Structure formats: structure tokens, C-alpha cells
Length: 398
Image 1: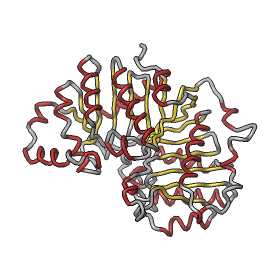
Image 2: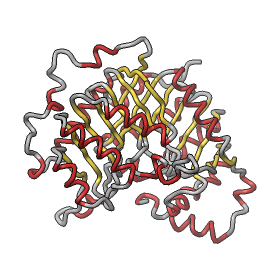
Image 3: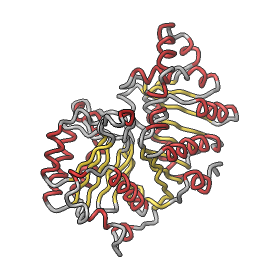
Image 4: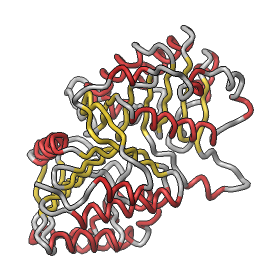
């Protein structure tokens, strides 16, 4: 089976080339994901870089912080970027503790009276880079609900997806992180900027990922959007991926408030015979976003699109699979905030074997879901319909 979308088409849209990644692990269980993260961080020998929307000082955040402090005191360079709004509940004492151990910490988009509207932007990325050869990214934040700590007795956590990978693509991810790092520069945190090993990773003659090339490498391309141009390219990539699909589209997202063009692409693809399945939360952690998105359900159901509502714990994953060959995993939802305002980080994998693995994960999830029928949905109360129409008005800012 040959998908209508090609690597050449993807590269033309994103204005960059595919690299390669060794997919070490697909992470879709909170406790398993954080166990892998802990193990990798503890093995770090040179440099650790983290960028997260939410970094809390709960048990999960404290466990990560303890490892980072230990590594920093051992002489390893550690850098942390957190989103000011997303981590608003994290006290200053937490960041002070990290800085006291020699860790450099910077915040994204702190409130400023000179540009108050900029506070609506979010650094929504979730990224960990270790020793120039290992990367984690996806939808997981550093907080108890993502690791399952607060539900450990039940063995459950929020349903999310991440990926752990090695290979040459990690070099590109390092470049992206450092570009963000420099843009967040603040005088009070730049004491040893020039001597940091992280900045020298591109001039070393021998770097570790060159020694780990394997025959399991997959074509991979970072899909990061931190500018208006980057977000336009990402929207164009999503639309083109939908339009080019020939058989099947599997979309999982935590927040779904599609714009007019995205809905048109989905409906047109369904009308030409493509099987489209949407996996959405039955109960979101942001109910008003749910209402705004549900205003589109009836229109999509009438076009033949299948909508599954996840009935397990809170669905927070963001994965998109096209013809079981082209897959996107990351932080971007199918809502206006992700597609038009936030800084987002994703990875695209162009590989049939990996696409099938993603499809099996999707099929596992829909067994824990309810298939929504048009007749059932049409019978919802007038009060619910009114709430949907009201919040739909504000969908671009939810």
C-alpha cells in the first residue's frame, strides 16, 4: 500500500528534510513512561535539557528535580525551560532550589505590562534531551496526573502518548532547544553560558549518536511550531495529510475545536471513502473546551466520520496516523490554541511498521471507548446544545 502523502511532499511543506531516528520505545502508560525517563536521566554523563509546559513541585516533579540536582552537583550541565502560565502553581522556592544546585532555569512568556497580550501564548512543548543522543517528547507533562502517582493504588494515570528515540534526529532537536534557550535569555540566569557543554555539541568531531546507527532507523522529521510561519506550516501539513490519505485516518486529541478548513478537509476525505476515526475524551479536564468542540460533532457524524469517546481516565494524547504509514506524535492538539497561538513540539515518523504499531495502540484505546451514534447525539438536551453554541463562539481562545 502506497500512501498519497510522500516524504517529498512533507519536506516541501515544512521546508526541512527528513532525518533518521531509532525508535527505542513508544510510551503510552504514565508509570512506564516516567520509569523510562528516570532511568535515562540517571545515566546522563554530559548534558540534560528539559522543556515543559507544566513542571509541578508534587511527588512527580520532585522526583525529577532530585535527579537533576544530583546530576548537576556531579558536574553535568542541566538546563530547564518551563512555561510561566502552565507552571504558575509551582512556587519560586522550587526553581530557587534548582538554581542553587547550579541548574540554569528559564521561563517562557512571563507576564509583562509592556506586552500583556503575549501572556496568552504558551510554550506547550514537552521535550527531554540527554547526552546528545536520547530524546523524549510527546504529550506528557511533569506532574502527578501524568505519572499516575495520585492513582497508584488503582494502577492508572491520564492516558497520554510519548516517544523515546535515539539517532541523528536528536541533533536537530538539540538545535531547536538551543534556539529556544537563547530566545529565553535573562541576565540573572546566565552565569556560565559560555562554558556550557550543551553549546559545544555541534563542534565535536565525535558525538555519541554516530556510534549508535542501527538497521532499525526510521525516517523522522521534527515538526516544531514556535512562530506564525511554523504554525501555518503545521496547519498546512495536517490538511495535506488528510487530503492525501487514501484509506484510513486515525486522530487522537485531548482538545478538539476544528476550524472551518480542517472540518472541510475531514468531510471531503470521508466523502471520497477514507475511513476516519476520531478518539476524543468522554470527560475532559477542560469542560468548556469540550463544549466548544462538540458543536462540530453532528456535522462530522453526518459526513460519516466515526467519533469515539474515551471512557477511561482523562485522555491527553495527541497522535495522528495517516494510512498506517505517516504518524505524528507530540504536544499539538486539534484546537485553536495549538494550531494558532502555542509553541508546539512534535515528531513525524514515515514508516509502515511504526504506523501499524500506532494503529494497534489506537485500536486498544477504542476498545475502552464508546462509539457515538448520530441518532444518540441528536437527542442531547437543548441546554447542552445551548452551551455548545455559546462556547463555540470563543473557540479560538479556548
